[in-house]
Length: 135
Ligand code: GTP
Ligand code: MG
Image 1 (cartoon, rainbow, N blue to C red):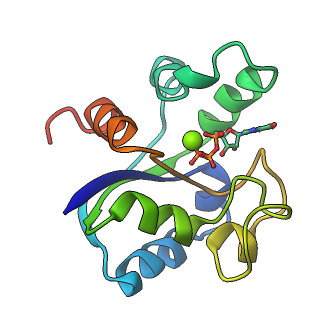
Image 2 (spheres, protein in one colour):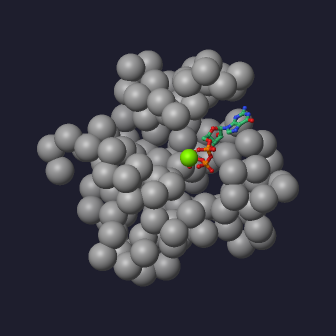
Image 3 (cartoon, protein in one colour):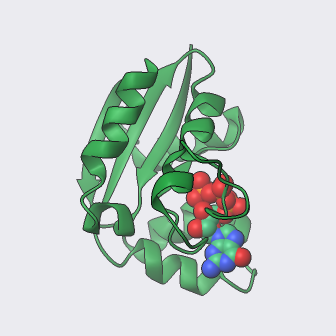
């Protein structure tokens, strides 16, 4: 079994898609280990997105992710990292995310693509420690 960090970003919470996202996780057969609705500060946001530091959209990314509450979740199951990324869909909701995925069905823009998921076991480990240090 494997764990991954899932976020419903501020656009998803504002659009009342938390239930939709949790439902898709559960229907896939993945398990919820932790769930927390919170507003993140700039420091956590910058650590979370450290790999994008220096990119042209970095500031936009930080102001977006800190703009309102997010749902943070630890999700578990066999191949949970890849399974969740399949449910979420590709980064660009129009060019990459396929119909049937969360982004493919429900999002239009890369900058507001509703959800996040860890991209590797190393990222998952780092991100789960960052968001849920007591887990
Ligand atoms: P996450 O699960 O959110 O990490 O998405 P990802 O792994 O599919 O994408 P990546 O890690 O490459 O980028 C992180 C986030 O930055 C994306 O989900 C987008 O919200 C945002 N992002 C990536 N590329 C761009 C871009 O070119 N412009 C803007 N505005 N945002 C971007
Ligand atoms: Mg990523």
